[in-house]
Image 1 (cartoon, rainbow, N blue to C red):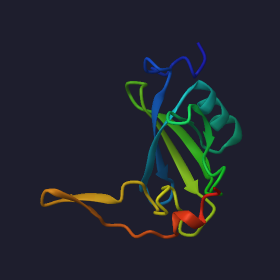
Image 2 (cartoon, helix red, strand yellow):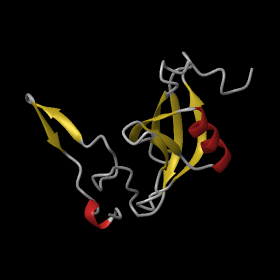
Image 3 (cartoon, one colour):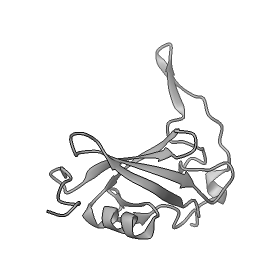
Image 4 (cartoon, rainbow, N blue to C red):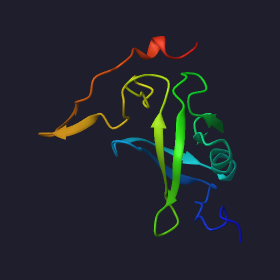
Length: 130
């Protein structure tokens, strides 16, 4: 059995992936990987995900330049979630979210509503190619 076969892939051949900043422990984003994406991530040392909306591989930073350098690939105790310990490159501070924020988890529940609590670091219109 190969290391990829030990993962409990879902019915679509995907596994959920959490990207965590190596130095701070901040959770930056959540995404999905298929076998090819995970194998490429291990090979390149950079995060490659599966885009469910576009139905294709997505090398993080291919458009924005905000690449994720992978320091460690971990798997949870049930073999059904992957954790990447990464350094977010391409901008200082690192931008992982397509909204131009450091983390995708910028909304906080307060008194019955969601409040944006983290600032936009860079306007997304200036990040992504049209």
